[in-house]
Length: 264
Image 1 (cartoon, helix red, strand yellow):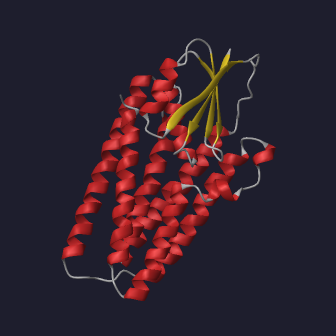
Image 2 (tube, helix red, strand yellow):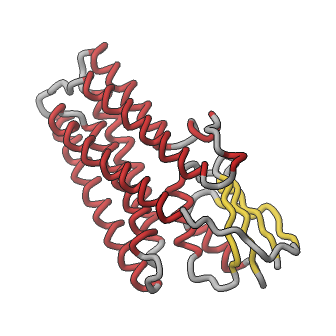
């Protein structure tokens, strides 16, 4: 048995962990995957060569880089029986906040909230593919990933068009208080998702670490929408909301292309 350690510089939340799991699914030489999200490390226990595994990790464009490979005597691994239940929980939280944010975003005329809702939906897609494709064929998983990826891109492009329409059209101020309150709730929700998934790893990781929480893209986006809401109120301009919306739509499209890589 060999043990190879990868550094994954852009792996900062559980949805990226699931993307990697799905990408490596089906490689028969892999015995176990051990993720360390706070330190952005992935340890792969495998037999034979590492070439196929390394290629798959790099293809996701998450900043994957092999650090070391060595032999190990470890052959037994503890499987987390609660993993499926935890995935259902975070799927439920993400999808609920997708509905909340897209509804309040449309009502409050905030593109930042609408964009963040699509980011929540993107995470829901990742967890959903992980759950619904369990036990399914690789072909089935690829088909689901392709549909999810293209659907995500379509929604983000529609969002971009709306941002452009508002930028060059009559300026309508979004409701800054709704932006701030809903984003604060989403921030709490993302923290809970990160906590419950990391808590499942081991007792030593049961407590949330600052480095774990505040390196998450989802949390940074929430903070961005909050800052945009404050600037909207301060400047009496919708431009900060449109700017954060544009940034998040770009991140959503980037995430969609990662999902599409699973379908190849």
